[in-house]
Image (tube, rainbow, N blue to C red; front, side):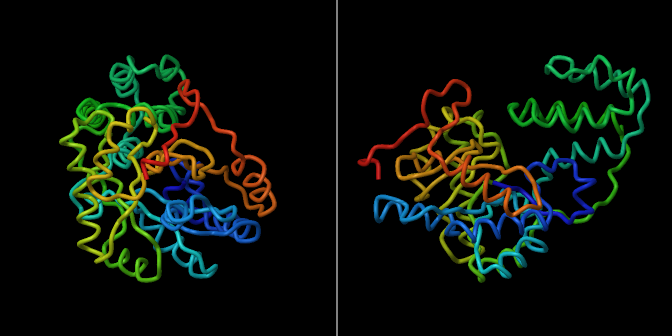
Length: 331
């Protein structure tokens, strides 16, 4: 599970790099994958399980969330070079220019603000109730921006959308006031690029319309996000979109209520952001994924894939006793 791909120089300044490899790191992973495993798409893996009852051999699939332009400029050439495919999950309203993701806006607010005691005090007041360690900000203003990037993003992602919108409004008012945001380069794919990659064989799934946190939506609103994003992709590309990736992806128990919606809209599967191995015993609407640590070493990637993530040892986040399994009758 990744989000974007960047150059080595861009990675040094990237606001969040654990799920954003540079091209050398990604190519090392691809080489290790091809050398030791069968590289297929999630779509092919799920169909193989449904048709034969199992994965025929150890396999690895690459996925990318959100539809950053780096998946066209940097990922796409690597996939062509190594003759493999991947799956990219699109929040369709961002592709269509209808929204600006809050995490990019937050990063821009932080980048463009000037640090002074007034702003530090204002931010401390806004985030005081969020269990963020801010009491030392005034003493170490050089750490101010790093704290906001490293700690606040993870808290905002688990908020109800309306609450987060208010926090973002308050942060903008405190950090940059009425100053207009500087124009930045386009970070999202366009439909021409998406169609080009789809023609090659890259798969595209839905990531909701507006990247809303489905954990807080009623079923009617969730149905719109799940169904409309699929419809838009299919209309634009002329091929069926069968996969979905949950925005944020952490609420494994909460997502179970959404299963009837995925069945209603004929999705084959849905991916969470929880790490783990996937086999025929997994609920195909709660598939696990893994974000690998970055390295330029093919040998290290091979070892990590073989010893840690291709085992059948499941993680147990938030006290889950076992990964939720489906019954044979559900398929």
